Image (cartoon, rainbow, N blue to C red; front, side, top):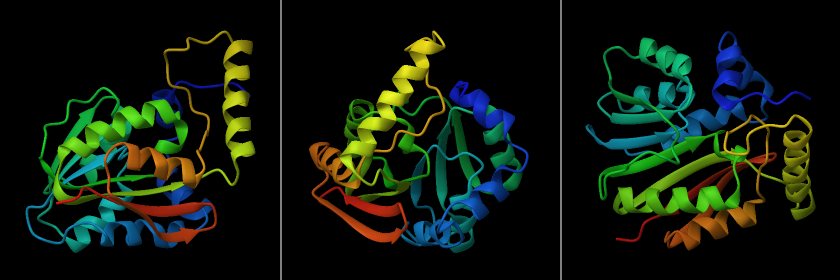
Length: 219
């Protein structure tokens, strides 16, 4: 398997991406709409979307709240362009950058969301991200995470070991992000969210290995 840099991977698969995501992942026919329904309904609500891609969850959210004010962060410029073309008349602010490097203003957002994006990264990177995200949310607000998770600690370990072996074989720069799925277990993900400061972390719904998790910043 040849590893591809993250943005390159998604750029090369932009055509047909939406259909692929909707039809090949267990629960996708339901979890985009379910995730959107967990976000605030009030007009003007400020929502942060991490790894927004082409905005499949935002299609559902803007149906529920067309006056929402959404900031989307993603590494892949062509995907952001596709998202912008879908919603020329919505309050949509798109930032082409790594969400690990993004500066997030404190106490700004009424909610944050991420769908099928964060399963590519280590616990250490997520811990750093979630701390920043916790600070960026207003008190009493929540982060909704829909993603897929490793079914055991052994599998989690295997995913990361396989990625490191591939990077060594292909002599790849360790400082880059490459597309390879390395999901944590649900238990580890929830522990990291709690360590970041979220006081109420719970599973809302399950679709096979994909779950929707809610993490609340206490008021």
